[in-house]
Length: 397
Image (cartoon, rainbow, N blue to C red; front, side, top):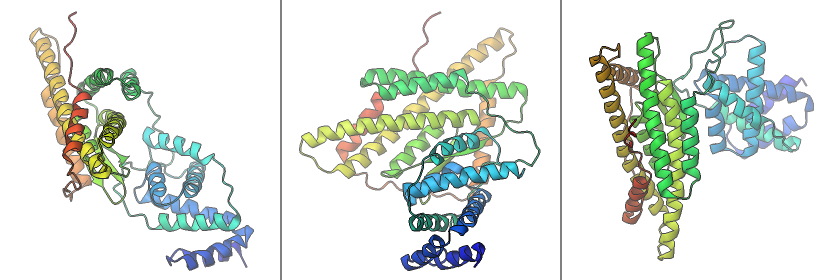
């Protein structure tokens, strides 16, 4: 019997019949034929390439696999992703562009280096379970257009000094045990983020660049996904982006200009860490008082935190725009060739909204469920106040 025939029989038994008995039959066929291993792996790389054609990116597939299956499946997927990428590069097939994709591959490469110690039957079972998942992935809106073979590669630009400072400030805010210090660090980080966005917009306008909005996907993991998605939406809106949550697949897609997407990822991650830390402390205090409604408390805490922090982020962004426009107007009055800021930002807002509408013409709103704990809501709002990110007055020169 040929190896191709063995794999075909295993797939016919296991991939299209979602039962344990069918899975065992397929895995037994593969385990009994070591010569079929290469063909099994080749089919896996084909499934991975099929996911790219349906709009998925490496991080998306790994995230969804981790959510639906086990660590063994994730490690197997990581090896297939790395092998498929190397095979495509060697064959000069079109490759998706951009530093974001490259960064995802680097992370997955580290994951693929972890060895597995499964017997042949267990390995075959894991492969078939993974292939079932890959085969049934839905089509997503593509975030990157494939680069034609032979075209110039987009080399990842080095991280700017501003982003490095923002990243360092947020790391310190997450690590400190003093609320006042976390507040000051987060405030400074948000000031830099808003300034970074304004500077990028003015540079693009002066250069008459063809800069256009892009998109990225950010995982929204359980538990309390609704509150976490609301927090991400608040961060996105405050940073001139728009977000839509795919609850079934466990991620939000954020649309915006690249400089703004970078800071949304940074700030959302940091605020989520800070919110979780504050929630854990508040919950411990509640338990000392004899309360035990942990789930409703946490959901209400995070929902209130997201709601309040959104208002504060918006206020910081507006203050920074007003300050920058005042400085720009003063420079124009003095005869300096400064760009009028407000029309530039308005044009970028329109571009982001148009791209968002193109990608997601049909979106619906969802109600927040489980927010019924008054103490959780009050303490979540208070935690957001402590993490406030208002702009501080500049020191006199």
